[in-house]
Image (cartoon, one colour):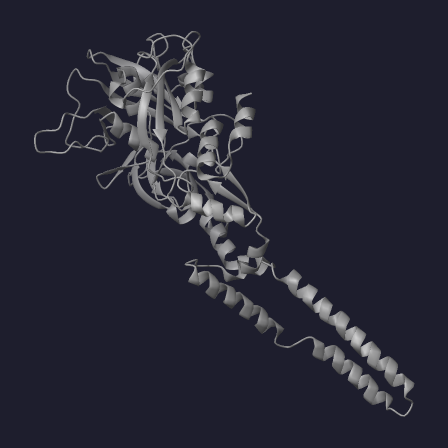
Length: 468
C-alpha cells in the first residue's frame, strides 16, 4: 500500500506486521458512517483505513457509487510520503538516536567534579607560587592553565564507549541481545516493569473450556457451572459460529485466536468466500475431524443450522463488543434475519431486552472470572418483518439498532495458561526491587487471578476492593 487511505467501497485483508508486529492479518471494510464528525484513523476508523507499508493480501469489490476499472478498492488518499504511517516510522528510526541523551547528565556531573578538583589544585599552586617572588609569573600562570586542561582526560569519550561495550558483552553472556546500544545507560534508571497479559505473561493459545447456556442453565440466583461446548443450544452456537472476523489466507483460516478456538470447540466450519458458517459434517471413517477449519469442499446440508453473514460491525475496544447481521437457517429449515452480538459481560448486559437477563448472570460471571478465565457474553435478536423485510434492509440499519433489545444466549469461558518461565522472571525482577504491574483489557477479576498466579500480587487486598 503506497499511502494512508480510507476505504470508500469494498473490503480488504491486509498484513500490518511491518507497522504493528502482529502476524495475524486484519480485515478492513468500507466506511458507511454518514455522521458529521472528525475522522479518527488511529482508533474508531482504524478498521476502515489502509496504512502505508502494509501488504494487501485479498480484496473484494464493493457496490459503491463509483465503479473501479480494475475491480479494485475505491479509496480516498489521506497521507503520503513522510506524513504517512510508514514515513513516520522511517523518520523515527532515522533520527531517534539524536534525541537520546541518557548519558549526558552523568558525563556533565563527572566533568563538574573534575573541574572543581582542577580549580582547587590550580588555586593552591597559584597561591603558593605568588608567595615566592623569585618565581616567574609566566611559568606560574602556564602551570595553572596546564592543571586545568589536563584534569579532563582526552580519552573520556572512549572510556564512555568502552563502558557501553562492556555492558553489551555482559548482556550477551546472559543471552540478552540489545538492538539499540545507545539506550543501555538508561537501563540503570528502570524502576517499573509493566507487562501485557495475553502472549507475554501467558501463552497465546486459548482453550474453550465450556459454556453456560442461557436457555439450558435454568433459573435461580445461584452461579451455574460450565457445560461442554458441544452441549450449547442452537442460539448460542449461531452466535459463536457467526459473530467473528475470521479470514482465509491460502486455504488457512486465520484471525483472533479466541474466535478460532471457539469455532473449533463447537465443531463448526466457516467458508469466507460465501460468508457461511455451519456445523461440520461428521468425519468419515479413516479421516480426521477438521472442526474450526475452513473447508471449501463442505456445504451446509439442507434443513440444517447455518449462518450467512451479511454485515459486520467490527470489534470496538471502546464499546467492548462486535456484532453481525446474518441470515440464519434454523434447524427446522426456516430462513430468519438475526443480529448476533458478543462482547464483555459488562457491555452486553446493558443491551439486553427487559426480562432477558437471568438471575444468575452476575454471580456466574464473577465465579468464572475469579478462576482466571476469559469470559465472553453472547446475545442475539430475531429481527421481525416489521423492522426489516429482508437481510439487506437489516444490514443497512445503524449499529445501535443491531445491538439493541437483545436476548441473552449464554457465556463462553476460555482459559489461557501462564508461561513456564513467567514466575521465575517476575521473581527475579521482584528481588531487584522493581515495581511490577500488568496492563490488560480483560476483566479485573480475571487479571487479578493471573497476577496472583504469576506472583505479581497476592490478590487478597485487591480482591476485597473489587468485590465492593
